[in-house]
Image (cartoon, rainbow over the protein chains, first blue to last red):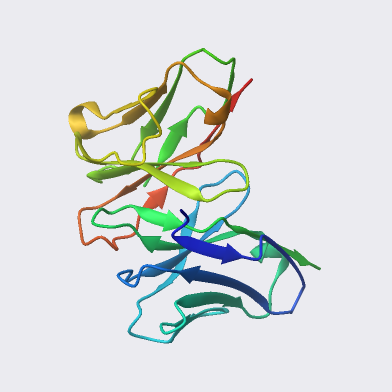
Length: 112
Length: 115
């Protein structure tokens, strides 16, 4: 079963708008929530990550909001730019190993 | 510094054939992971090496998949015989030894198409 559920599958946003991608998880043992960004022909790259002891983390135009009680976290991209067009994956760490459970990905397109 | 590199970038093979994917991790990274993404689905963990040892291979689909990491450097993932459902993008990632939240760096992936 999917450990991390991600939505929407695709998203089209006007330049300058806000992009919002949501993820939900079940396993309350998860203690680290990274977001990965993947451009076509490239591998996923770590964008920003949060631990559940904080409700928000901001790095430049990218913000993670975390709701521990709802077991949800989301990525907000402020002032979205065409260069942000990529596939975004949320993730959570696997059981005892150093692997990651990924969401299904969101293909973001920012229109000029 | 070179990142994680994977070969080939694309491979098209017929059902029943054998394919070997290669991953060269970042130098000095003892952790090496293989993942797979089937079209439109999540990126799924396959297995994890620490140096040359398999730490966790719980994600390997079946015994048609064989991963090796001789000498603890590069790794290969062999699929034999390939089936249609093996099509997807195979990613390799590597990381330094650390806690389980240590950042993993991904290669560009190998797109495997089985026809």
